[in-house]
Image (spheres, rainbow, N blue to C red):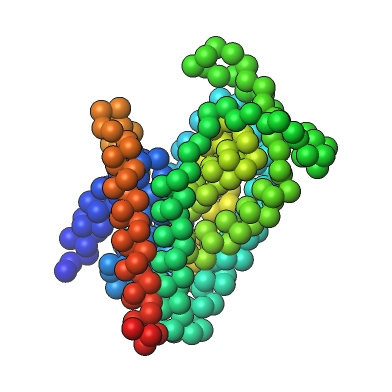
Length: 290
């Protein structure tokens, strides 16, 4: 297969992934990494590095818009963003060490572990239901001292929305876990940060989405660096993949108003659960367990 044909195939596949991902309301990095790790022989380091680039490229465009509109909570981003960035970099370093020092066993472990993570993500998407404006009955003293709540203007309702946040200490712990998983497996983190902010810290859904995009654009930029230094980013693969995901996201955003997102979301969940099982099987098979 010549280089042009390979790049074209990658571009078309990633365009489809980006389209499905945006309609289903998830990041393209999750679907990209799991599918390419589960059904291709491309080295995991290359796939994970490109997955982070994909997540970064998709969110950076939205992050700039959210910041300009004042929807993203800068105080919240600063509080959680450092932990996410630090542990995303640590995760990337650990992920590279596993595959480079342990060879095929390391690759097997990465595939099996990612399989379990993807199944958990699928379950989160299946049961998690965000609230547009969560009601906070009690703010803990730690969160209150931090003064994280920042009002924003809601254009759809023509009002200024004042909201309260809570359980920031839990958020700090969970964001470090999410960052480590994101860096290790190259998933991005939109699948976890938005529910964390909305369901745990009780941020309005729009604020959670906007703040998540800004956090990912910062944290994944840092997490990509170890992969870049290890020469895991291959332009022949990364360029058509990222371009395809961005084109697919643009197409998906236009189709979203005409397609039932709930149906696409369930299709995505089935794909993730099936791919997760495939990854677990391949990992265990490489280890000689099955």
